[in-house]
Length: 400
Ligand SMILES: Cc1ncc(COP(=O)(O)O)c(C=O)c1O
Image (cartoon, rainbow, N blue to C red; front, side):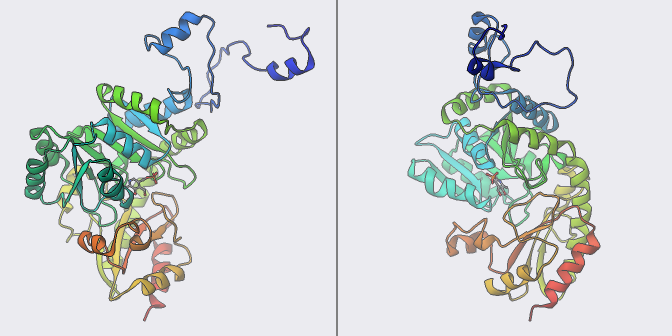
């Protein structure tokens, strides 16, 4: 369209836009912040709506930068396809609905899932008449009993649990789930796709809070579900209605973060192994939870599930005899490690589960799960381990 004969206002609106199609390809995926897409022919637009032609019509249905992120995550998780969401909780909620959770159905979940997942199931879904049963998923006999008793549509577990670092036996859980016609949903946030690909062990849905290791730099909130093409149809339809989609700016950041995931996680695993070993010998530490420690009950399982690539960058530890005040004092004394409510970043972060990630649980629920007031969770960053250890040492030295 020639704009020369148009008025100033018209030229200001349209000038520079929809220029002739480029004959070059940018090396990285551009950010596409548009909410509309135009086609030369209305038949093409109609075909995109009908999903008989590839393309985009409206970003709640899909958009190019988000699609690039989805395809990258599907690739590294070994899945057919992925659907991105505005947060990890958006992804968990949608995956549960996508797995068939409705009024009158049941869900079996790991006892020590992330606090918001626990609360979503034990408060909101209960109100929506979805029964929830929590079980220690490292006890396969207990899982079998729960599946037989509740006949749930979904079994949801975390590859490495938050914050107690238990490792789920995914192949065994997938077998059990299959025999009860239950969909296995795995929150793989703590392990990251670098350490574990749950779909290859029989999971039906893999979920990530991409806010964490996938984004990796503490600057973006995102979630993603990886699954089969068949399962994605339902997720896609649900997401068109619920609308918790990822934006293009966030998708671009998450996609950029993903590129360095293996480098970061390798360093985080090496650092965490070193720090866990050091902490386990410290007289002021009563217990360290880290799958790479020789006394961790699922160490061998972790070694095989994670392809001997490491044991993750997360650990938790109990300060001996500590109450909340002592745990807070320790966290305030840290200078390099940041007391921030997130994980999986390049920065080393500490968190007090009882008052943050698992705050919504009652004291009785926390006791049942095993989260005490002296428990500190640590997400190890990519700094040099001796600097992190020196910071822990000086902070522990301030305690009685
Ligand atoms: C294991 C796990 N899953 C899911 C979530 C929820 O992710 P988001 O905060 O991106 O909604 C979190 C958040 O900390 C988490 O730790």
